[in-house]
Amino acid sequence: ILDQVRSRPMTRPVDVVNEFKQKYGLTITYHHAWLGVEKARNKIYGDQLLSFDQLRWYIDEAMRTNPGSCFELDYDQNNRHFRRCFVAFHACITGFKFCRPILFLDGTFLKGRYK
Image 1 (cartoon, rainbow, N blue to C red):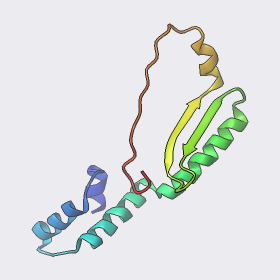
Image 2 (cartoon, one colour; image 1 turned 30 degrees about the vertical axis):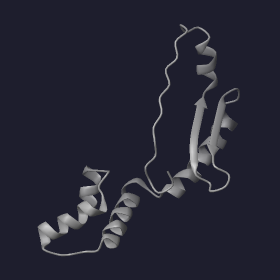
Image 3 (cartoon, rainbow, N blue to C red; image 1 turned 135 degrees about the horizontal axis):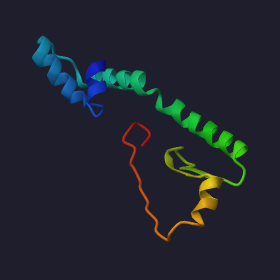
């Protein structure tokens, strides 16, 4: 199912169960399909917990090497769920003074295990 997850990242375990039934005539459990989808996602995109650790490392390194910049990593202290990450490099902050007064904001939602 690696190719299926690669081509359609939002593949659901129920889709895998149905595909195995149609293509191979095999009945697999939802749990086995879920494990397969999770392993495929980890192989393609990497482990989410490791990605969070790499994000903390990136914030620390960016703060060290970019004085005057603003970095903010926010997560829930109780369950350690990621909330948001704000990055504003010093060059962008100083350059912003010469921009016209208009501001655009964008956001995204995480849909993985750690939301």
